[in-house]
Length: 324
Ligand code: GDP
Ligand code: ZN
Image (tube, rainbow, N blue to C red; front, side, top):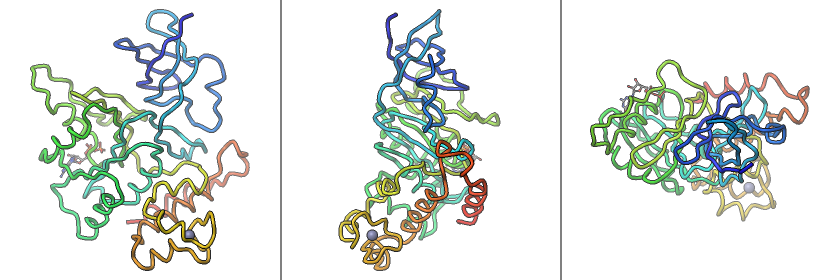
């Protein structure tokens, strides 16, 4: 049977929509190999490319996954395992807001840590509401660290043309905390530059908030909307892997007394000294320490169900709610 290559545009209950050109196939996964990837909550994510065979009509079977060039992964506390939310994106857009919910830089820090080998754009929605001076300072810090930032307002339309230009030609995933205005923003973006009479349906997740990622075609870009969340927990990884999300540590890290220093309590830690000297923002450092600690507390399911601490998640949630 002839093998085809397709793109996963949706996945619900192990039924995947695989797109090839203009045709979509509803596919299951063939056999056990791919469906038994133990280290992951879901074997396939929106954005994955797969080999598949059409069976009858517009149904098919997925045979295998092509290698991922990048991913956005989070820790799924319920499943006790990592979960790939999207793969192979050109850009991750982290939508945040200046108010209701309040600006939460540590949420952004975690989004950056969950993004592996993919560029992150930080969008501050509701910029019609001003940030405090401290918040503004923490926000523009991302620019100094090398991330793109942009203030927009889905309400007034401010900078939506600039955002749209940054998305041109790309496959982008929008991630964000519930309430930041992600749906309102996506709805506006899908209509920007659409000047002909053909008006697409108003896009709104509305009350029936779905728990899966959705791929939506814009005028000259494609958006993957991911479910709004309360929090992203960083995936289970090697501790040193977290450092990719803290590029400002790098120039100091090479001067630490210990090779492989994790910049916690090690003597002669140059990173910690840089925090004391205010060369590294203390809140970014604090953010790092929290993520590091969270890695100690999570035990993947495949490392033995009985060893897992049940109280961890509840404790973590409590900590987080006191954060700001
Ligand atoms: P989501 O949960 O992130 O999808 O958020 P929604 O799109 O449902 O928006 C949450 C609330 O924020 C709604 O009441 C919106 O009207 C409001 N909102 C969205 N964008 C803006 C904005 O740019 N400025 C202001 N002031 N409110 C906004
Ligand atoms: Zn150190």
